Image (cartoon, rainbow, N blue to C red; front, side, top):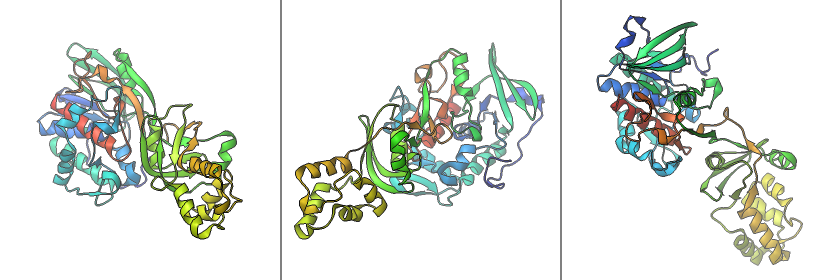
Length: 418
């Protein structure tokens, strides 16, 4: 069964070849995701011929499911500030070489006009991720760039004049030679989409450092005696400010039967470490004490639960009332009561038990250390001719199109240096 929801998800031209011309390629790109496809197209513009090896049965697996199949292909506000890395300056060179404007212009040139949704997120007007993939597959076909699907790379060996790549294609093993290799195989999320640690294994094989990896942009779990409280609120969504001692985000959170999700939680998850607390302001643009004081001037007999039900859903108000003096009316609330209410509403404390893992994560945090790569070319310092781009590098963006911008930029930069 195909991993893709629709059999017509993208119209991809046939891209096969015999092996008699295998040495004609200027480079072999491993991975037909966002970085690999952009690299192939940009290399073609420069007159370089490449072969893209893809483990799945068609290109662009994560592109096709991104944004619920709509593909949030960049963010208008993208800059180095929205990325996590051991070297916060590393991605600046790539973003200077390939800007958000370049991304917008590239897609517009091939028929995709963007529409901005929330917080600078840009989607195709068509709301179809397959349109994004089709641009790359058709350009590759037009320029003679080849994409071999169902091709799994088994090993990469450095030789005097380049690399030997051993792969399994259509149940047959073969070895190919190439002067240069582009590792664009992605990260560890999501296994059913062909996620692989090939990029990390390749880096370690060549004695390159790898920054510790973990799921990022991932829902957080609650276990133990607190789990039941979250289960009763499953499906409730609130606009909140979520923070820790590193960063804060203002977006929706979603209560689930296993914990917390929603955009704000996914964002903070990239900055959360096991054992740490996160904090939630349930009314980020109002002060609960002021609201109570205003209300009790005219309606002091109103019960606290009734007041909270006007600020939140009834179900949520009842849930948090378990932790508050809900049996009191507003007039009878003491200063200590008000302080308790304010602490709960504006500094709701959560200590997640963990996260939902790579199969529910949007991206991987960490990866091939930026110390091992040239920021200007993304070539490995220790292994001339070997390049790393996209998710397998220790550059992780926020939710909302940022990781695509890194993928396009890194693919472009590598192509210029093949």
